[in-house]
Every structure is written in structure tokens, then in C-alpha cells.
Length: 91
Image (cartoon, rainbow, N blue to C red; front, side, top):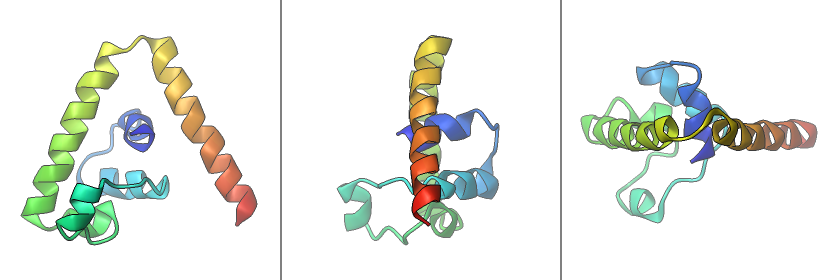
């Protein structure tokens, strides 16, 4: 998930992390939707069930992120930046 890769760079945690991820408008898995996804990371985080899912997702993606070279990270995060620019132009 590119939004989480980009957010990992900020060092944000907790609700601030969730708001930052939300700013990228990431898609969520069908499994999360089926489990009653409340619509955003910030809305989900106060619920202990969702907080745990978000923390697990962040940890999993952090391991992948840490295993990448700086060049690989930059390519992924650059893709997010381009997506945000397109979104901003459309608003």
C-alpha cells in the first residue's frame, strides 16, 4: 500500500498516522469492508479491533519497507506524490 509507505516516512503514530494515511485516500481490502470498515483510518482507530488491524498492517508494511533499497522506496513514494498531484488538479 503506497499510502502507508509514504506515511512511514513521516514517523506519525496513532491517530495522526491514520489521518495522514487518510489524506492519500487509499483503497481498503474487501475483507476489511466485509468486516464493517467505518470508511477511514481515523474513524476506525478508536475501536480496539480496528486499531489492532491498522497496527498489524503498518507493521507488515514496515517490514517490507525496511527490506527495500532507498531507490525502491523512492520509486513507490514518488508514485504516491504523482497520484496526489493528479487528485489536487481534479479538485
